[in-house]
Length: 106
Image 1 (cartoon, rainbow, N blue to C red):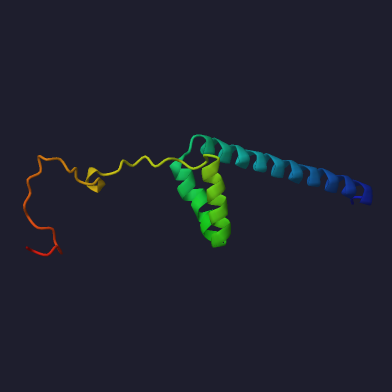
Image 2 (cartoon, rainbow, N blue to C red):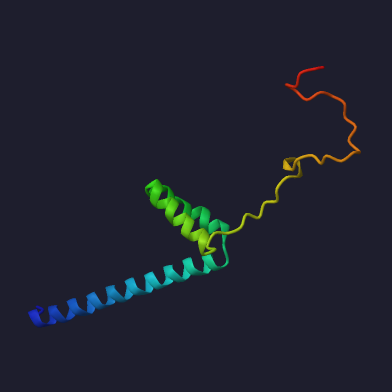
């Protein structure tokens, strides 16, 4: 049969172990986030950051996104812009005489 004094000691030890486990878990989580933000891991942003932003109020998410962009915490897109999106050059070599759709024929 355990006495009240031993129960108090066990409770203190148990609370300390729980507090230490929480500290280690939080430290590991902060390291995980920090490393992924430093290397701008797109999968981290897709799987962790974007779901958090979607759960926030729109104004709060917008303010936080602006601050993240200000401090360069957002990865640059690795996709290249298609050459089809660039406007055609107005070089004299283009001798196209077809009318533009919607333009009146004269």
